[in-house]
Amino acid sequence: MPYCIGFGCDVGFGGDKIKKEDCLGIDLMIPYGKTGGDKVDIACDLSCETIPVEDNYFDYVYSSHLIEDFEDTKRILRDFVRITKSGGNIILVFPDQQVYEKICAATGQLVNVNHVHKDMGYDYMVSCLKSLEEQHQFTSEVLFKNNCEIDYNVVIVIKITK
Image (cartoon, rainbow, N blue to C red; front, side, top):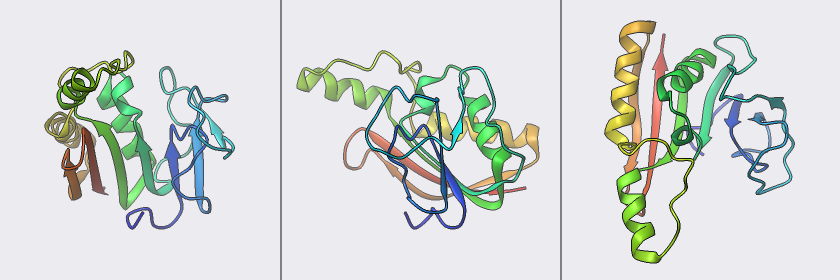
């Protein structure tokens, strides 16, 4: 929450936005996950379209447990960078896939079949960002990271400068 400052968005929020004020919910018209009663402010299917807002629109972009479901991680990241103002933050929460699968095996849980990257994790995400920086004229600075220190989740807060 301390990095969700200003006017932002929660992409793939599933009905429960990270903030109730000054935060637009971006998701499918009818989210496949429904965890709360917050309405979809901007309907968007990231599997086939970009987020329909102008460049440099948000102070922050928050997304939890969404990016691991897309084959082209760089395309999704590029769109997040595009809609983030210079000096703004991108906050990502996603699984380290190998740790996640070990926990699932140990607890008898089924692995989420929508996760498409066996190498998804902190290093993978940083590598994708660095690759995009070279092509799209921005820099990223990791302000905060939690790399599976509690469970299988990775949390990264990235400051974007254009």
